[in-house]
Image (cartoon, rainbow, N blue to C red; front, side):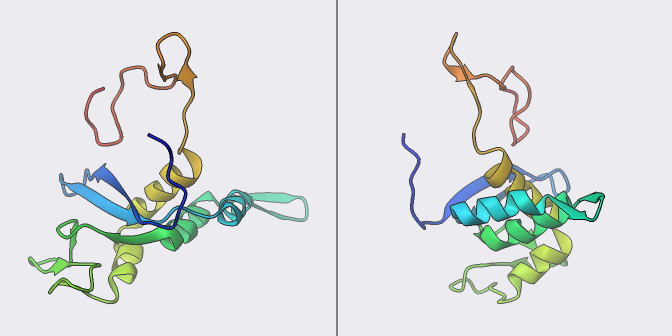
Amino acid sequence: MPRTLNDEICKMTFQDKISGDKLTIHYRLPESEERIAYTNAMVTRTGNKIKNTAGEARRKYGLLILAGFDDGSFDRGKGKPLSSDPKSPHYDPAWKAFVKKYASDVVELLAIMVFEASLSNIDPENDEPADDKGGEDIDGDPS
C-alpha cells in the first residue's frame, strides 16, 4: 500500500497506560518545511551553549498536527466526555487546550511517531522491519 500524500486526516492508536484504554488520535501529515523546522527546534544554541529543547519541540509541533481524537478517548473527569468533533454533543471548542494541559505525553508521542519514527529499515533476509525483533508494539501487544 503506498503512502498517501495529501491533506487528509490520518489516525494513530496508542495504548494508554494511565487509563488502560486505547486512544485514537487524529492528525495531519506535516509539510516538509514543518519537518525541517521540527528538526531544527530540537536543540537551540546560544553562543557556545547548546540546549536540548526536544520536549518543547515535540509539544509545539505535536499540537500543530493534532486534528482531534475518537470520541471516548478522553473525558474531563466525573464521567464528562470530551469530544473534538463539532457534531458530537460532548464537543468542547477548547478540546485542544485540555489535551495540551493534561495530555502532553500523548502530544509528544504523536510528534515522535510522525516526525521522528515514521520509517524503519527492512531486513533483506526476511522482508520485515529490521528494528522489529519481537518486542512490544506501540500498542503494547507482543509482535
